[in-house]
Amino acid sequence: MKFLVRLLRRNEGKGYWVLNARIYSFLLWGLTNPKVLSPGSTLSQMLRIGVQALPMASLVALSVGFILAMQASTELGKLGADSFIPDLVSLSLMRELGPLLIAIIVVGRSGSAVTAEIGTMKVNEEIEALRVMAISPVRYLVVPRYLALVIMLPILTIFGNCIGLAGGWAVCAGTLDMPTSFYIKHAVDRPELWDLYSGLIKSVVFAHIIITIACHQGLNVEDGAQGVGRATTNSVVFSILWIIISDAILTGLFFFVS
Amino acid sequence: MKNTPKKTSDSSDIILEVRDLVQVFNGRAVLNGLNFKVRRGETFIIMGGSGCGKTTLLRILIGAQKPTSGSVHLFGQDITQLDPESLDKIRLRFGMNFQFGALFQSMTVGENIALPLQEHSRVDPSLIEMVVKMKLELVGLTGFENFKPSEISGGMRKRVGLARALALDPELLFSDEPTSGLDPVMTAVVDQLTLDSTRKIGVTAVVVSHDMTSAFRIATRMLMLGSGPRQGEIVAEGTPQEIRDNPDPFLQQFIRGEADGPIPFRLSQDDYLKHLLGDG
Image (cartoon, rainbow over all chains, first blue to last red; front, top):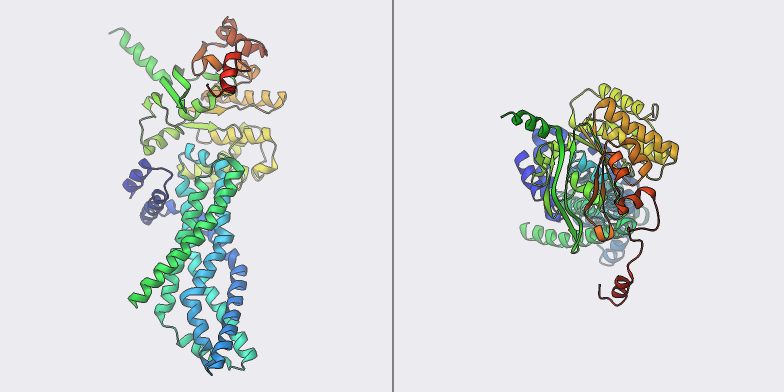
């Protein structure tokens, strides 16, 4: 693995794909030498990027659960199909809305923060100081953040799905007098395991997109404070754009596969 | 045969050698065929006016930038030809003290100094803690381990930067404008620290500076880079005394800090006209 790292360092440039390849090479190297992955730093990033995003992600997921159940009750009620509301809330959250909305929250909260942090470090010569101290900025700064988000976004998504289901239940139980046991049975039984997996695969892909774009923008900041602002905007805009595009591609792929 | 041992001894004595170094930006030669050597144990000052290419030269010397042409031999190896892996090995043998410290703002002073030790040595954390305390004592900042860089003054940040640069006990120390923006007392303190590093610990120092008082105080040899019409060339090189005695008007104007002289403050009348008419 060290050979791969060496090869990629020789071709180090400003390219997004080179950054991706360097992250993977360090991850592979980390399989044999865990110190490369900076476990302490990864844990602290998991706390910052993931755990601290829980309140905001919960609020959004709860609101989405409410909205989905209320919108569905209006239309399905006309058809006398109220009993399908838990199914619809559950499937929509697991397959689509859970991963997508939580990812968008994380882009705004954590992706932008990572770009601003790394960009400011670049402006303050901290990145250059790392290089001069023979410490790879990709290994020291990017890899722990990458691992943290790739682990935490699926966890946040699962958590968000649960909170969203609770939001749907509040509407069903409060306005439609639906028994809680009925809601839980339909919300849990209707989706298949693949529905959960497809959502989690999406959240891993979204995590990759968010953190690689955020770090790439941060590492390539130029022109001081103005450059940090520009990079942060680019990070958010490109992340959301590519999340939605990749969501469409993955949804199409899963549609044909299943 | 008689000369052979002497030759070997000379070359092993040279820690840094720059050969025919050229750096061109947008068609303008900022450094134009520089040649100089730094010997082990020296405090070598690179001086020159603003925009003369001092920082560019320093960036090339530490391997942060590739020159347009020429070579930089550090510890006998041409770093312009090295792959990043080999360059990292060289980097472990020198320390760099950045102009504004380049301290990691998210870390404490102690963590900043400990970082190179944690990354490049396998020593026990308690030993690292001890080394951090020793380095802080060296720069007169005992007890400041838990302060954040934002909680200490500019002079203190520079001293922490020096302590971090010395963390791995390097053979060579690069320092970029170590006294700029400091009051005279703090300038003397930083100069004394540089002298302590070179005389007591035996570190070779390459210092970029335009502070003449400070430069003459610590230098064993000096080099003056030209600007304006002499941009990119070496105006003078020698011991502090040789530099003082050098009659070059360009050099003397710089040493005395005079506004009038060969160092151009404004464009010449012809150049100004050309510039206005978009011809130059």
